[in-house]
Image (tube, rainbow, N blue to C red; front, side):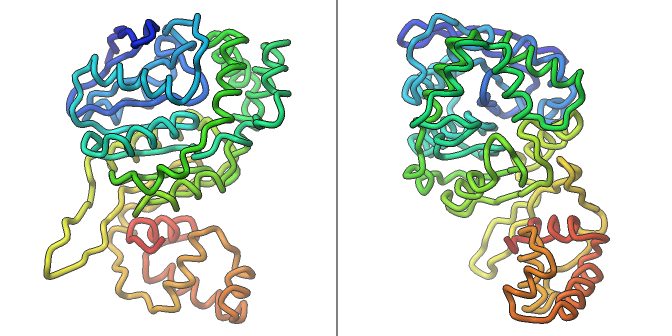
Length: 367
């Protein structure tokens, strides 16, 4: 599987690089912090495989990054949206899905709100609606941007620790190098400053495309609450919390993320409502993703109507990551009663642990 790299020219004269791989309905991948469609391909080839088997996947480098023009002065959201418009026009896309991560989320939300009839489905990973406070960048403080300008190597290492805490030395060095090769110091600083000004919260209710929001609970770069805010703001969005503290997923976990995205884009288990019924949509399987593990056979064989109302209440809280003590306090019941309900939930759903039970709740629309 090989990608093809092409270029398009924006209204302000910037040349954007984009890569195309696979065949089928189009999916546009909006990059996050920085990217390089050529250098990233070596690590993404395997991960993106499940998606490219069913879709034509388009990735691109934002202005000032990767193979796109580096001599850029405008990194505003408006400029980035104009770039996205340019890409869509150059490819002749009339309807497509979007996969956006991190800083790509506000672009996806803005475009989907403005062009609802063009967007089929959306998957958002580790993203946000307001940039203030993301990756330590705040409107009121230019400390991080100043560090990037003064010592890009040191800043790249610091950001690496933020994005992939606990990574091996080899992985940290490779990730820091990727950042330095994907953007120069001035472009990286301006990207941080511009992103801190992003605020698309008012546009969230205008997104009508089916949307899946995935976010790691311990994400150090984009706090979990930011992802929850996005999911809560988009009508009927599905929220998939995953375990872990990494913003950039580890090798293997990223492949599972693309597999989950593929299943969501093809509409796995989607049930069209009819006048006679109001079915609960079956969500794509989470598989193993950043520590979230689901037993597909056991869960798909279980039936939600076997759970009592109280068990469903407990299941919802369990899926939100609450401990038995917290569930007991929320429902004003004893710890013994909570443990009893959890045991019943595991037995009835076919789950072998709390994570599988949480995945069950997600698949059956209880969240």
